[in-house]
Image (tube, rainbow, N blue to C red; front, side, top):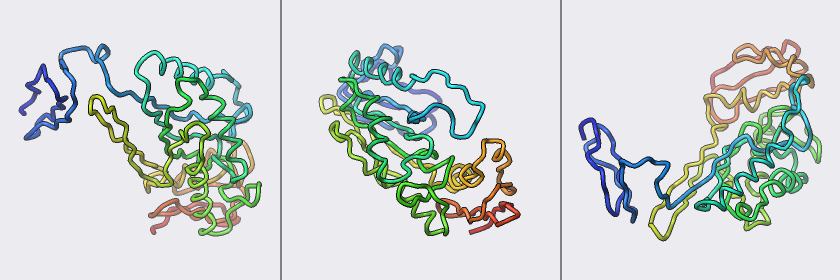
Length: 283
């Protein structure tokens, strides 16, 4: 296409120019589009909301900092109210894209607490008439797997993982328990029990559809271990002063007596007894 797109007015199709590509990628949509217009004034057939790090705790303060201050304790409800107002004022969203950290600080610790956590942190907050039946298309955040305590559980108590198998089972449970939640509002919680899935929204009147690719990056080799599995706060039981030196290749951890293996394939962290040094090793 050279260095620029040749189109200005297009009828019955929205075209997206790939600069330098041999042809344009076109998506059929029964719309009249003037590409010279300000996008903020355009008429859209589909809309979606997106939010991340939204899952407030049931208590005040931080998991990991003793010096945290409790600013704006009502921010989640304020944002939920604004979402409801906007959903009623313009095109109603087809979905809310939840980008993770849905339930601070450690996700679902054990199955018996799940419905109560969702009721308090999700159902009771996003309950406006315009928003309460909109599907939430969600992925896991690192705090949904853990982050300030042990990953494994026994009954209604978090406990150290005693083996690699127990650790992986604990991580699998975190995803399973959150993904299998059933919302009383039209089953609006739409998280798949997978690390990758596709969800489609569409407008039948215009023929426009959008595929949403949901990727759980906690399953990636590049950074998952230090964000999820290196549970310093769980083993040290201290504030952040005991964990600030947790770094790749050389990690000082208090009371860490178990192997903490990387979630997924690739290198893993080996936490040795007594010395508490963490070294990266090949698979």
